[in-house]
Length: 68
Image 1 (spheres, rainbow, N blue to C red):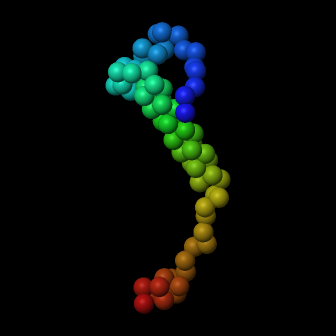
Image 2: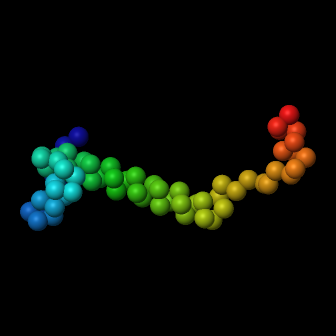
């Protein structure tokens, strides 16, 4: 999908240098993908710290049964 984005020359040049892309479109696409990955990772970290993924601890007896 094509879109129009207004960026100043200095920002675009820096973006192209950081991403090692020679063309503007791929540089912007790579930056957007990286931004989304970081946002998702930050949200996952926040949920992790809040205990959203905590599971009950396994008792020694349950562990012994699992180990079979």
